[in-house]
Length: 289
Image (cartoon, rainbow, N blue to C red; front, side):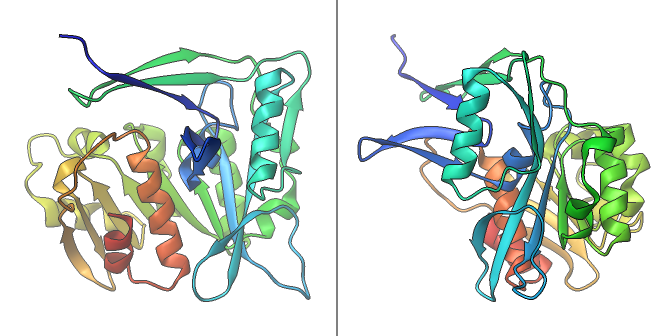
């Protein structure tokens, strides 16, 4: 039987699709952080701050409608000087992203992923070309970026990412993390994390053999430092714990699933927006779900 396969290009900040005969790029906070800072998808940074006319911030991108005032975000990263890198930067700008924190590596290439989604099995395959553009060094990241944000988002615990997070936190920012694949480095630095959102894969490695003890496991991680702990469990929804709400379990909504590409990215972006709106940890989880 011939299968119907859709092809999606991961365009550095998100997936691209056609709508009304024109390209539309749907962005999320994780992809903003994750795809651009390194050629090997190993580290990155995005910051969020409230606009202040009397004290303008340094580098920010698109306004977020958080309901309680305008919020803006910033991108830190690097691309190659190839056509794809130039496209990525233009697309950031098209979505209101200030790219003054981005670096263009002359003579280097930008990473590219093509996701092949099978509509029948809902499986996927990823064709990947690793770029040669190196991510920013710690010395290249301007202090004004780290000291001018209220939230700092990371997805990998590299040295540069964690040192940047520490500097941002020292200046008053809160650190939010997308922990997709298990990382011992992430766990070693969990004490500086304020909002810890991890995947089902991370959860199963961390709590192998006691996966069903949802509340105890969430409490255990929360005691390590984060004020909010959330684990996404795919079709099962998510679980979490915070001092404000205690333990909570949020089932997923019954929907006709077309494609799960970017589902985790959307969750992290929506959860962050929920916190910016002043929602509780549980309310933000419902919004993200």
